[in-house]
Length: 483
Image 1: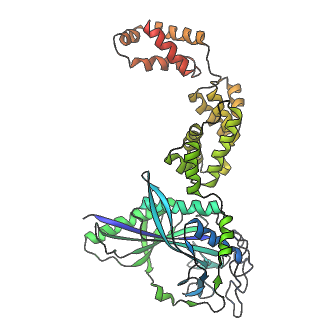
Image 2: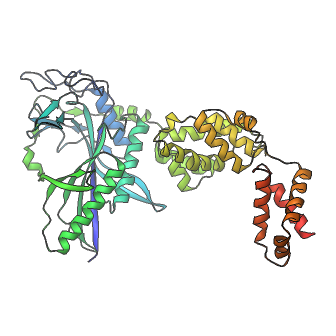
Image 3: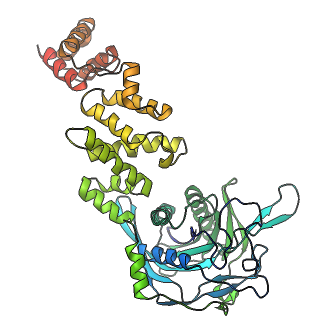
């Protein structure tokens, strides 16, 4: 039987405020356990919360950036559950009156744009962290993270594959980074998601029993966990075994999920309005002020790149996938324009960034902010190709040296004597010598085996150590073979 996969994501993003959402404790990561705490975030009797205004503005930014309606009146509620890392015995969240609702973002799947609707974005405070002892059957609690401001972004169950889920997650990740409201660090838990996944027979309208997945700390693990769960649920349904509504944890080492607990319903949390926090009133002036502070967002930048630089959708999508990559590209365009008489060639710049540069960054597990080749140096390299100083093939070798050493292109070309040979007399002499040394291939070519043209080109490039200008080689070779 064929099944349709239904996935909804609940994405949590820690907001980059200096202090926690309801107290003045620092949100800095990496301090010694339980150093960033106070009576408020520890839930001591009589301690009263005070809302962080910056956290609200960051949440409004995310709502506007994802096309949500910002609620003029929203309220905090207590979400009651008991866990060692939750000192108050409840989490302060939003329930029936969230900050933002009814938004959407667009993702690209197989070169087609797909709209994914967002149910709501609400604010809440984060819990602490349990540290499990590897050698003893005990756990320790670090409350430093307790009270860190969070937004939770809840999608509609409209994702139909792990690939779509990852693309959606990457798009949200890009948006929070563009807005500079979250550092997006998945390993440290500042950007994380839970996934609700179910299967139903293809064409059916009734959704299947959903299972919640947790503990996925990378895009790769989100994809692997969803793929595993699809396979697991298919097997159970085919064997007429009922799917249990539950929460399951992803074990990356074993590449499988395992049951954690039965899935809670909203009424299990016994939500009620928090009596210590007044409702939040957000008027049009506040919303407009926040809207005016928004940077150019990924979709806007993508459309501009396509219009201004004549880039294909695929190239524009990659270049705008993160703000630093987009900035690097445009800096290269500016630098290339300043050194090349014919101006910058955006497609050329795009090709080198999306292929050579991003591949090298991925291989070295680096972000573009750590790239050893600044935009000016890449522009200089591309200009050397453009003015026929070096060939494209040599340029790739130079690029590798630039990446490994941090040197600029001109310096490497000079040190290694890589200047391209363009002298027609020298190239013609080399070609005649090769033709004379390969009489059998020459005869076969003249008898109609024209594919040997590539053989002769290769021999010339080999003889000149790749320095001969390919255009000049082709022109002279055609002339001599035609004689």
